[in-house]
Image (cartoon, rainbow, N blue to C red; front, side, top):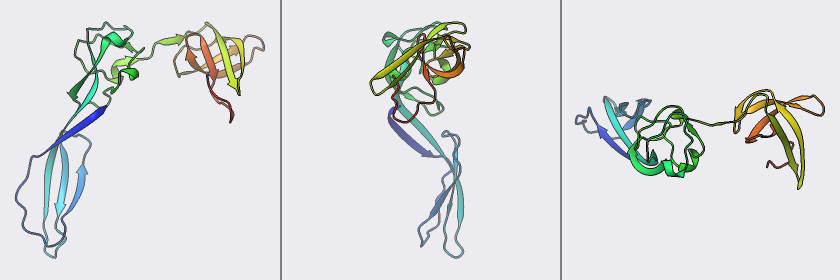
Length: 192
């Protein structure tokens, strides 16, 4: 999310008696921005305590669908626009188009709907049984060998791969369509 703006409204306010010391405020429950509970205390001898409720309204510039999408459709630049929206109750709104590009929608989405990470999934780039290229790079040297995927996975997922030459099964991270890289990269080795 970018350019977040917050508006606070005190719902249960009442005038407090004077306090000679700085008033102490403690959060009691801030799990839901739409209804947060606080307590104000006056530390003076014979001081007072008041509970109050605050409602926050949070808006931000987020990624929004620019056209209807079918379930399983891959998101491209033409499907995403940025708009300021109320995201008070959305903890997974996507803030930049780059975070949604190449993802697939889990369900049909209407035009103008805020894109949320819970609505999207990464497309499977390696399927079980696929022939894959196992690639490792270090200081300008690239080593690649043929492998067979024993699991399916999206970009970034860790899958088991059988090295076709040695028969050894190793854990690899999906780097792209049909390409995997080592999960554990020794110090000094750069990833592709």
